[in-house]
Length: 66
Image 1 (cartoon, one colour):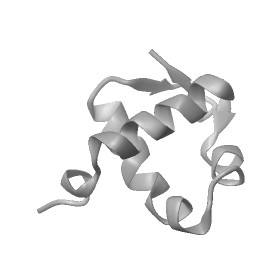
Image 2 (tube, rainbow, N blue to C red; image 1 turned 120 degrees about the vertical axis):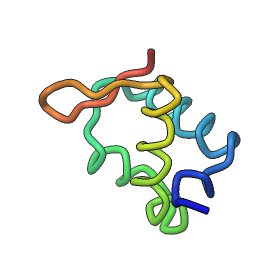
Image 3 (cartoon, helix red, strand yellow; image 1 turned 60 degrees about the vertical axis):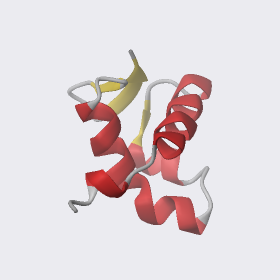
């Protein structure tokens, strides 16, 4: 099982809600709003959500819901 396979749909939905509440934030800015447990999975969840086309990142590393 790869790391992105370990990401649940619930985790992707929670991330998407966070990005919709705080559009245009970087991963660092988003992680500051998360618990320690959620921060540890942020990279995997971001990658998984991008693969599922739920969000996009611009050239400056800011995330936006699609």
